[in-house]
Image 1 (cartoon, one colour):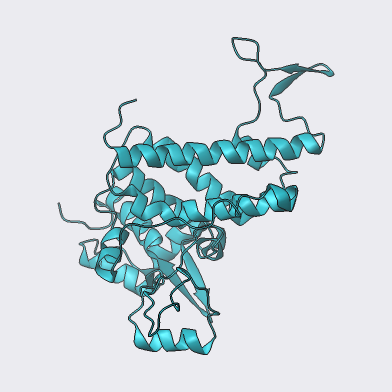
Image 2 (cartoon, one colour):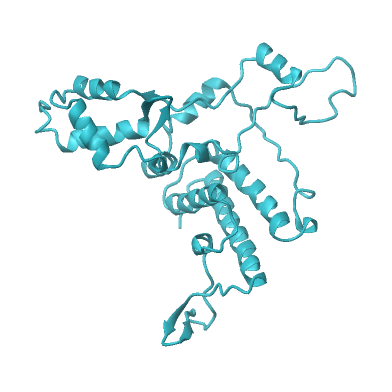
Length: 300
């Protein structure tokens, strides 16, 4: 494997280390519960265990551990881990210099989830939060930078496609869950007297007077809502792109054939009595129109 830069090499190692750590944690849990976590095939009534060329047992990989019906991990945490597993596969052969900016929140969630389950499945004394509290960040971020990051303009196509595809397929409540992607806001703190700034990080309740004051005094960088489209807007967009025969009826037939309003697919959301589509569904519609351009009146 050829690495193009140190930054992405480090990210790949982080993903690998996270996967290894979670695998060992679940192996320890299954061992404690007397659950066989080695790969095997049944030959009659006997187990024939899979082994390496050197004769060692082949233990379950992380994905197999997560798919076990006795797995103790919550589904939203599984989504975070499945994202990192898929990401590892994608970045092994495609490198970039900015990928950590897009993914740090997911690694942060992974770390917090790991520490939580150490304490939940075993004992408090095994937790790692007393050894590793907070990391230091050597760069600041402004809203302009955040908007650039969301565009995925400098990621290899396969990686940006994986991130967008994975996010569009998970439920909306999972996407916004801090166990999937841990997002926090840092506001520089100014003080009037020496000794007041002894804490680098201070947490305050979101509904406290202090938080309300911050909201009034600062322009905050916030995770924006996913863009939403009415069905008529999607039809109009396609017609403006030249697909003159694509209409409301055809759009309805398309989403019904794909079961696209199944909330588990993450293509849209019901608000009151109105259904709104996300950009991920608009991409599906565009692909459908491109694949059927002749019948939909597209001039070539």
